[in-house]
Image (tube, rainbow, N blue to C red; front, side, top):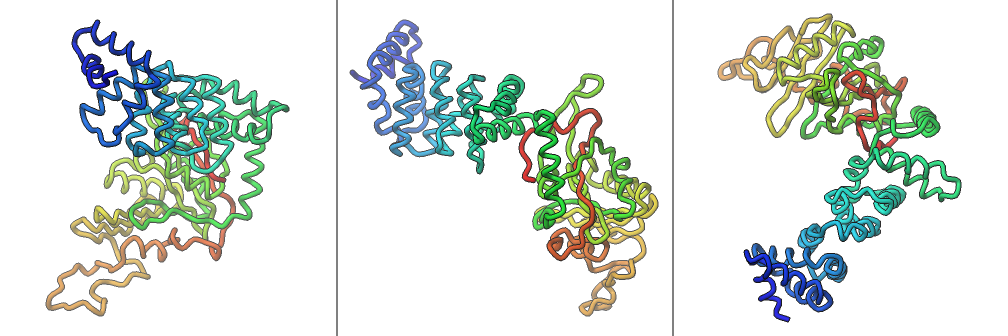
Length: 423
């Protein structure tokens, strides 16, 4: 069989000729597939596309041949992914079997295929359960697959959670798939109660570790004694006790698109209010949902929060972009702020702990012209004087109470945020 001529026929504008070539390739798959894959690692562009079209026409036998070549490492990983994404619904069962593969990379190709073909089969569900039963890294597209078919998988996964004949591993995997697809709200009352108990057991014994602002980050700080006002000030809803580990992970997550009261789409995010650390509560979360505009939003937000909490502090860092901001507000009014890229950089009266630029040992009045209220400290240092440096929170930090996880829009619930959190 001349593969080259069949590939030419397959690409022909003559429908009869192309169909005949496809039929001949499929009929002789045992010899055609190895020949097609011979030297495929060196193909690029249109030559590779021709081979991929031929493999797609052959179907399931070609799928097996490609997979075997991948296992023998006869094709590079990047190309294996491209070859395995060409098959149609005839290979749905093969994609499900591949999704259940213990190999992380191959499993990801299987889930990608199931997702592309929109297959919500029992075999796909079982692959999902096995994935979350194993723990560790989640294969590529497995999370997307759990979310895409959450509604159709929900009854079956809940059934597996309560099946006395199922192994503990299977029940654990079903729980992981439920949470990955629909958040904690996907669990039944019994499982939710168990998780809430586990959170409360872990809270007294955890050592808090807050987000690192080495490259970029933002947060707010309010006095621990008056922190309750933060929920109304920021429009936070459905707050729940949470460990620091889970709260930090949730606050770094993406926003979700949800329907609004009028049916129009809107976005919602999550906010994490820390336990009281050295007398302060810190707030982390979605900048767009909690603050909004880069500058006007910062000022308006910190002043509004200070009305409810007596005092509020705002910090924003972006080493790559050169942003360095700290703002202090009391009772609805900013009393001191530093903005590295602003003119003037310093506004308000210096605070008692500040070192002024004019008092710096390196200050030369003959050459240095700085305002009398200019300080020397940016946000990364100021936070430690003003309240708490998140990077220094650890075993020696005095901690009281527990953290809260809340959402930025009413009626959304935590189920709108699929995925598991480390508690």
